[in-house]
Length: 350
Ligand SMILES: CSC[C@@H](O)[C@@H](O)C(=O)COP(=O)(O)O
Image 1 (cartoon, rainbow, N blue to C red):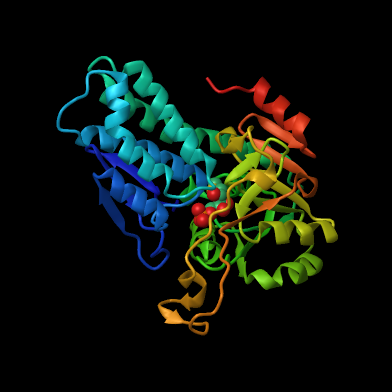
Image 2: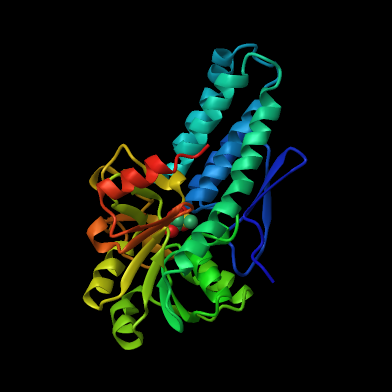
């Protein structure tokens, strides 16, 4: 069995697997409205940086399809699509893949907006971004797996799997490839409060592929690293900065510090669409999520009324704590600004 697609495009409609109800229910929701797509991204129906980018490209396509009269110039198209573009851009701020995908749509509009071929061109782009992501993840997976020693236990956080991407996954892509190569003895999946992506999604995904996974609570990480000596912590990223700092699910920074103390290496697996060469780590915008995500659990209040809360969705792990960043083009060992910039410059995407 393999993981169902998070995103399906068929009959000019978008279907998103509702990740909020996994693993107990496997339900797709249909979208033909870009504003509903933006709401779905914010509400975590679809999540994970590459999946958010792919969804945004389909969102712009839906917006173009929905216009009753076709604009006749690129500027007119941009104006007509602006409300939908703004709604998508404002859905979640940290995953840079969202903005990367919207900018690719802008380029297609600039190139094709003067003729009558814009909708086919936007369709081609969105379908291409979607398909390309699977192939990119397989390459990331194989590069990352080359770093994993035989008979390894590895530790992952959140869900950077097929569900978070076009398919195969980034961090889970590395684990899939290493498992295929016979190197994986076991995987620890941290549960990942408050949305429980590790418990609900990662453990489910890995079990479907018969990859031996053990679910653990976040607070067990230091104990488990000392007792089980994983070879690597392997995570994805929402944004990798020019200096090699990486934003990922809240708690990743904790794990990297704990890993350093225990001599466990840290790998960030991310496509180059997740890089932001304009920013350093401290400048990465960190999404604050609503308070009720931590004052309530499974519909029940678990904290006093009016308690002060702080609910950042992501943190930034400094490059000094990262041993390898793995992209579709290869491995950046001991990342720093010079190596990140050189990697991006020598591997510009066509
Ligand atoms: C390949 S997904 C990479 C990251 O987006 C992932 O690790 C992560 O932090 C997802 O957070 P989420 O809040 O579930 O969107």
